[in-house]
Image 1 (tube, one colour):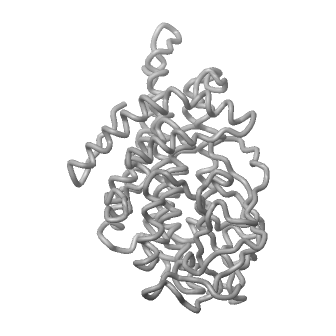
Image 2 (cartoon, helix red, strand yellow):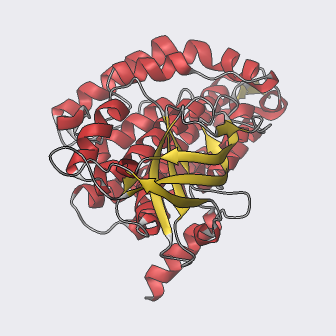
Image 3 (cartoon, helix red, strand yellow):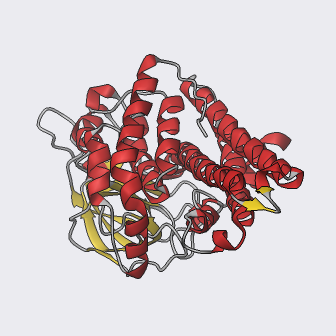
Length: 398
């Protein structure tokens, strides 16, 4: 069914039309075959990301002066939702890529923005976000990946760029990293001191840095085209010019980025839920039992109504948080609420959509079984929904 959308500018409508055109021509015809192939081995939709990048859809919420779209989050997230309605792996990738550029956009120096953002926002580069570790997921402060000082480096300061600020070598492992092995750079968080909460720093590590390697792709139940691997740092050299913010500022950078990233996942989960709902509605109108369409049965009609309400509620939640962000107001609690509501809605809607289709929904003849598998992980990444409840309760209780 058609989704009613409101945008703060006419440009938002134009961007949505462009997105729908690309989705119809480039994503929908390829998603089923690509996801099936990726389930049997590694396949990564590089060409799709290049297409979105050339269209400017990978950089929408970032500054125009560095090649971004300069769009409000309210617009960017609706574009992500539209992409997710066709190909969830790609929508998650768009959100991850935006997350990787967020630290430079928000915390980088003018010299770092000028040096790094044009490449990140050009569409020619794809980023990965190196935060989680095998033993440090929800507990970010437990990370053990370490960056040690390694002589003199260059942070781009001064007329000739010379400085006494040191370069670094990074050693450790990151886990569950989207785009690992395919990314052009890795926004990496590493420990620079033993202070648990204030001993973490942020670095932009080039994808071809010596000492950088990757584990085997994880064998996941869904999102097969979202390649996820361990990233292994074996004394990877990183110049000080690529440290974002001060030493020890990594934790607030990571948490601020996650607030923004949670909105991307909320929007993607909403798009996934919308597709499952649309499929359930279409099937219920066509499938006949006892001489009439099953949609005419009140029990099923009420179920559809509940699913519609869940999708609309999810969309309203993420858009409200986005408008707060665009207005420069605190939105951390609202981002957690949006992520919680949207991903729980995606799980419920995809589950019940299978029930509407009955046995057909349990087969690969319809994509709703894939939607169901893809929905589950949305309750886990960018902070589990248990963590979202913790964030919300802390805000509510002061």
